[in-house]
Length: 213
Ligand SMILES: [Zn+2]
Image 1 (cartoon, rainbow, N blue to C red):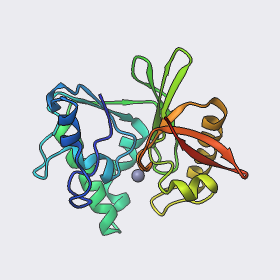
Image 2 (spheres, rainbow, N blue to C red; image 1 turned 45 degrees about the vertical axis):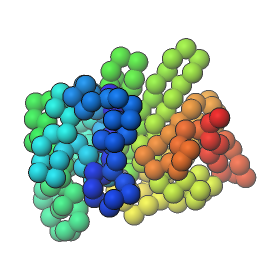
Image 3 (spheres, helix red, strand yellow; image 1 turned 90 degrees about the vertical axis):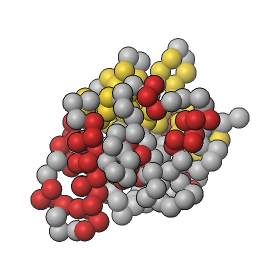
Image 4 (tube, helix red, strand yellow; image 1 turned 180 degrees about the vertical axis):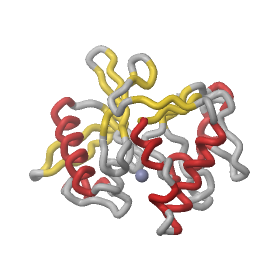
């Protein structure tokens, strides 16, 4: 399974190399059967379809929060802004390409057995992370609750212009970072810098990211 699918070619030639990364691991796109979508911003979903609109993963079921699907389902909400209207159109293209292969869940719902969504509303209304627990070990994918980690871990009150509800995003960010610093879970996220696996620690009243060994 995958969590999100990257920006395809939308960010230029240095990003969007999911196909090559999968090939390096020997994973054919047709063998992916579940894709959890943290939220439907274009840098997370463009890789789900070709430039022509065909599904990149012919056998995968898309899983996302119902609140996320619902947020993007009304074109009128985005019609006053060309950028947002284009983003909304891409969500429609993706949902159209996967058709019946869509399963929506509660924001704390089960993605597959053992893997649950983690509600982090605010960046978008249905924005979620992912939590995996196995024995004493846990892994958390933070989604887009952190974009500029040096700034936002030191001061979680710093938002990004893409946060739909900045106050809710700030509360979700603080709550998640506090939880990660307390329980020591291995974590990563959509915009964490390489090396992108690590742990959140407390520093100077804020937080820091310590890369895993
Ligand atoms: Zn985003």
